[in-house]
Length: 155
Length: 155
Image 1 (tube, chains in turn yellow, brown):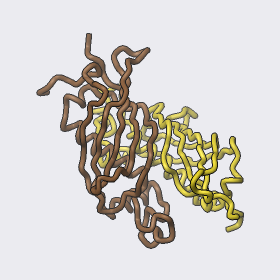
Image 2 (cartoon, chains in turn cyan, orange; image 1 turned 90 degrees about the horizontal axis):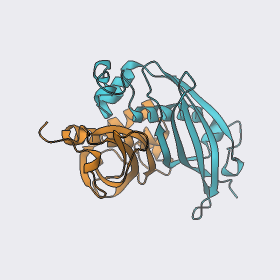
Image 3 (tube, chains in turn green, purple; image 1 turned 30 degrees about the vertical axis):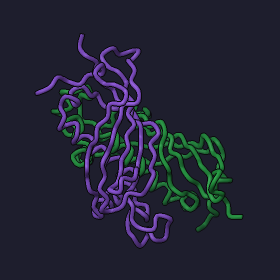
Image 4 (cartoon, chains in turn blue, yellow; image 1 turned 90 degrees about the vertical axis):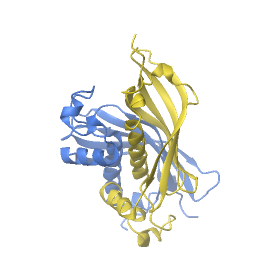
């Protein structure tokens, strides 16, 4: 590893980075929805035309999965972050703000908004990030606050 | 439709139902993770053995997708609910409580915990449900509070 791990103590409120981009295809929208979220507006333009969506849009859970795909790729390309991450215990305030359409190109931005030591586990701290996923028009399509566990610097 | 739609006005705090079950296979765990969350502990037992997970576990985003699969199947089998649902604007307090392992059988429980009229859109109301996903040992593996939009009874 070229750099030291980026430990809990090294994170500061306001630290941010970008991840992505990733373009979502029509085939992928339909494949994900067929398996996990087979509502008509996620399956075809014809069915979506009967709803307030108008045209085909991706499942909101597909958008979260694509967030994760972009985020993991970023972390794996930045091993100093990867090394100190202990995963997420959950997510607060997930909001789907706009439909994601076939052909959209997504990118993400994340910023540390809170950090606190664990009361029970000195080897880790809890870090809250505000994540925003944008489309190619720089419109936010999804926001959320993952609650991540982060390794503290070894004593 | 055999029954009248179950409108916003018909929902009461404490209303609950069960959905599922669904068994998750090793192949599905690995396929989802390979596409969307390729962290080692989601890809093989060998890699997971090097981590605090110990053995292969599903991506948390796979568990949310499986929640949706079970939930949509329930709604499509209960058209009086389906007819009044306008989808979800987001989710609060998503928590992954325990690993989901290959071979686990998941089921869900949902209960109305809050409802309020929309201030701006009289045709809909906002309903919060507490969702719990259990494994075959009746252990909760995931909880969350989807924020659903629900059609009001036509005037």
